[in-house]
Length: 109
Image (cartoon, rainbow, N blue to C red; front, top):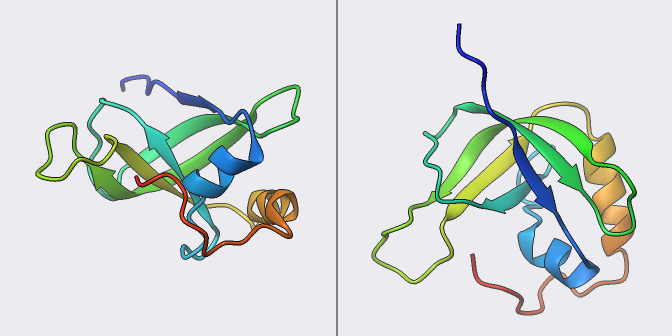
């Protein structure tokens, strides 16, 4: 059995969180910039540090989105991770984003 390497993502501010958050997924999700390819549906481990947090939160999720490193469009390469556990992380993120205009243009992933 191989040991799976965890991704780490530290989100420095609310604007970056707003751009990376994927609210259209059932339990929420987050875009993780990476050149490391992962297949759709594969399980991943993520150490996610939200703005203002002192320590990361361990997240287990599944790849729901892939932006390849050498894709036809000019999107940032990475993966969208769908949170697979309870909605507690989704709720924490949405509290941080409360009052933000979720339709405003942000970063294009």
